[in-house]
Image (tube, rainbow, N blue to C red; front, side):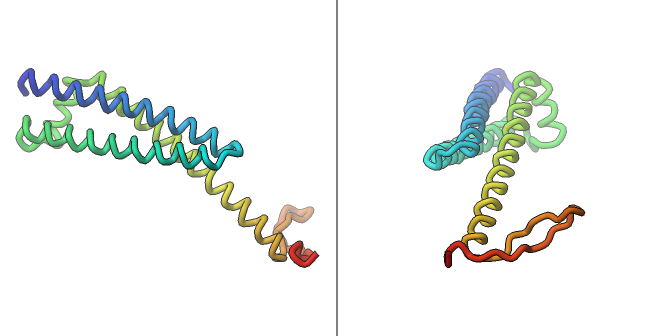
Length: 150
């Protein structure tokens, strides 16, 4: 790999790291919005997250194309050699993306919990028998009068 290509690759990795940091910050803000009472903030953060993921995808494609052009058959051993040459940046990017993945999974879990809560509340309003726990810890449906008919 020549020096010009290496500098372009370093620049690409630096840009990916910068965008990954923004994504991490956005995911933290999204988690705060999800645990709060701000649906508009959730939409805003989700939109920002999608845009940042698109940017990361574009930069990743550009990086792969550069590697393929500079190293014939880039992939496998060639990609590992390049990663070793640019190890610090590469590891920083991998760590950031791992944290982003974890944060996104937590946010997804929060969304599923909220959806379940809303579903349970809607069932109660519609008059469905809510699921409750008995003294032995087993679940059973307890009949209630529908709030909609109250």
